[in-house]
Image (cartoon, rainbow over all chains, first blue to last red; front, side):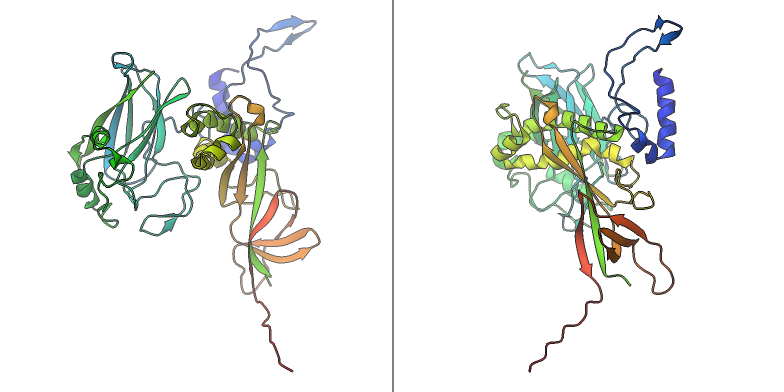
Length: 243
Length: 176
């Protein structure tokens, strides 16, 4: 089946609801191989050509993981934040790495993560199981850049303001790290209307048990930002890995 | 008259014997994510199974929720209806929360990958039990008039996880 027709078919399936999904049992949609073949004639009928089954479509009919997205906001409100990550190979003259998968995730303006149940962040217990906002991944482009649009993260008790990052190259994890921002910008953002109910993060970057355990590392992990609450902030961060 | 307010969980175990497109998608996507995300707790690749990774580094328990993001989009296609089980009229049961669980996996053998999705209903009224059957109603009951009910058979992987008895008879102790 041509991809276009396949997508049309799936869109119809999605529109008719989950009963059809459940009805797609093994007998009806047997596990097929990924090999392809050309039509051949046998007697008076044509042996139908085999085609690769392809990936299982996601909810919107797309065939790539919806978390493969540049804009991870997914409806969360906050001060806009644009981050560009440049992945470079320290073992190869700091040349850029293309096709690296960069995953990011962080809490929302009130200090809650999507996907977790029973979180406490000073604004009451909340559960966000089944939600995926402020999470996503991108593959670095030909210039080694993975760019994300998100919101400025909030904070929760016991941690400085931060964003989590993981980098994979050819399916192998090459880096797990976190970045932070200057407290002066944190405090300006946290005084703005969408964040003010939670107030200022009382924990400094230096006092953070993870980011603050090395002042050199902390300096390297603090991303310089430009912008304002009204215009949003943006910054670039180079992730050095060793291939 | 309702006996109790309950919540029910159906546990859908998914392994290599998957039997629907949904199960296959969950199986494959969660395994691919396991291969990626488990590396954070197994950086030297010394351990092959989730059990051993977890025993070596308790933080690997976060793989339950980390992997859940790889299958959330498939669960969304269920439109909050539990797959597999039906009530006695053949209708699907609604769920409120779906919790993903990584039961076991192996870095080099997808056939040992096994996960579960635990579908938890909202508040239900348990009106009566009839042998292995439960007479249930959704939400809160009106004070008067007929109510819409459904009958569900207790079966493997189905459990009552929350129970609050209503109109408990007052126990009177008398000294003699």
